[in-house]
Amino acid sequence: QKEVEQNSGPLSVPEGAIASLNCTYSDRVSQSFFWYRQYSGKSPELIMSIYSNGDKEDGRFTAQLNKASQYVSLLIRDSQPSDSATYLCAVNALYNFNKFYFGSGTKLNVKP
Amino acid sequence: GAVVSQHPSRVICKSGTSVKIECRSLDFQATTMFWYRQFPKKSLMLMATSNEGSKATYEQGVEKDKFLINHASLTLSTLTVTSAHPEDSSFYICSARDTGTGVGQPQHFGDGTRLSIL
Image 1 (cartoon, rainbow over the protein chains, first blue to last red):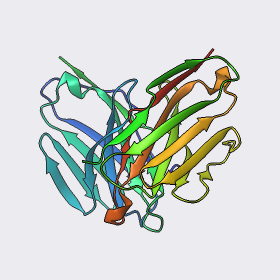
Image 2: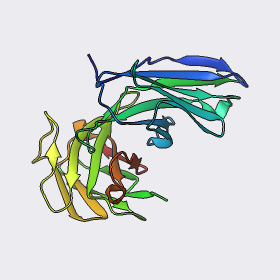
Image 3: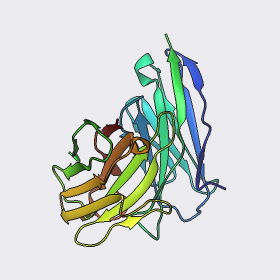
Image 4: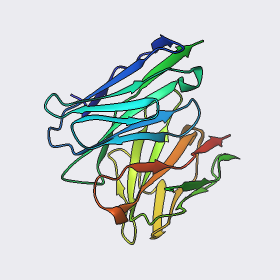
């Protein structure tokens, strides 16, 4: 079992819709959770961090964390074609703050 | 804040050449930096964790004599691909954490270096 699992997609949504990206993790004591966006041919870019159960909103992005169920999600409201990218979920271990586990990413296509 | 600069952005060179890639944290100190490799349409693959003032920790299967890492200061880590061959052609990306602000800080990525060996 991989430490972090993501559906590879592609996830296709129409422009203006809500895109929902999901990630599950296996280490129950994971502490910090991150979402990165990676455009084709570019390096990852941090878009959200979340550390506590519940929702965290930043503009059109909402990260949701449920530690009991070991999943973290990212919602993108009013999706734009410019949101088309691969979204990577990353989990930081509690016992080693230099240990990160990255998911393989979900490719999102927002169609005009 | 949290800017990581990586140079060069692109390298094209002949087989047998050694190539050095620099990774700098511009506005924070990074005790630890990370080096990744990524093939087209594939996932990030961690190559090594670079620790300031000590030896890098390499992931299984990564040749430490092939990929030399030096982390001489709190803001600079270098990756040298020695005697590069066409199979070393890839997208190399560094990242750094602001370790001065405690646990739970994210990695911030450089723009990457596209290495092409002819």
